[in-house]
Length: 117
Image 1 (cartoon, rainbow, N blue to C red):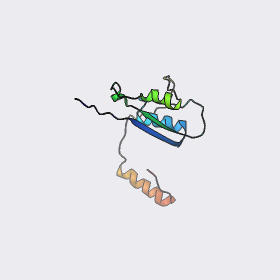
Image 2: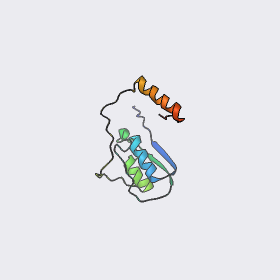
Image 3: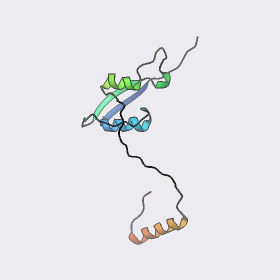
Image 4: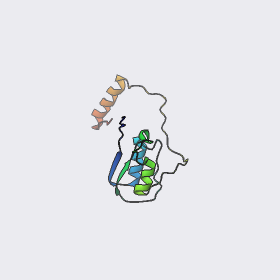
């Protein structure tokens, strides 16, 4: 007898906007792409979302995918579209020299202001 372990993913959202949730889906990597809120909904919401991760889909006890759970449990449907996005490209980076740091500290001493990194 082979027992296969799998887990249910859960996410509790408290007092967050749909835009905040879209950012979470984007930066957590769960949606595997950029998610943009185009619902037009304002204000904050609260909900509990439960799904089975993609890697465990196809097992006998698997629950809904994230995309199905979003639609069935909270009424949000993710639709794939193309739209422009802002991109920041860094093609070169160097550590600041000791002279640069010394000049910045000297400037901060004279102006009374500090630098925040």
